[in-house]
Image 1 (tube, helix red, strand yellow):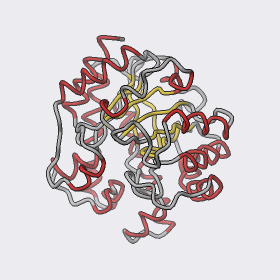
Image 2: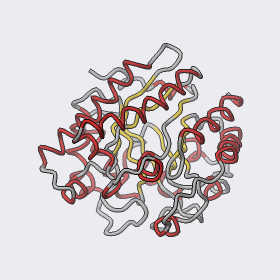
Image 3: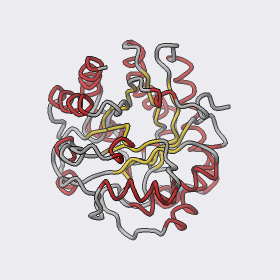
Length: 315
């Protein structure tokens, strides 16, 4: 049974943290070979499972220590058909991996959650294609069919919600939302942005949110931005239009480099943790509806600690 599916606590305005950049932490800090950026593949082996557990324990402990909420985002961002096929997974094995990801989140919640630090389990969904390049954009109907299997697996689990992270285009966002609506589980849509504040397709963030809401009857519980540096979208949010208030979360990159530059980088650009915390804090100061904060590529516990300090001071 899910715990918060019918009433997500982050919608009440309490500050919630997320983890940092899981994949870049595993690759660059822990020296783990992670084909296709697929963290869920570590669930195959005991050592990999323990590495993931230790990763989550660090962030959950941080939230608990500060009496903040926490979103336990499962390690399943790459656990869809196309990516799993490249790793040799059958459909049955992929379903098991998605289930095991949620089971781990449940175990971590049981170990860390307190009344002051609610912990929401989210089934993480990634784009069908690359997180930086739109590639062949599906229609909403195609996206709904494609993502429904993973979403239905999460809906049958203890997951409280699903989060579609690093979404590059509006049709896929619409399809994911419709699949979640049919499965009866809340969904969060998180768009990734380029250095100009637009989606990789060239769409404006405003148009992406307005169109997704219009095509799904305001289906997403809220929207997020991830895999972009605050300098990429700060001016994009500089408006008091209603669509901005639909954004509740930011998972920022440590680096201000473009996606293309990050793709070519052989060394990790982990930026300045304190500066990133200040930049996120400044955004939440201007937009007090943004209360789910954390990191993406290049970030680790240092960045989340600084983000936590800055945003807690505002809250």
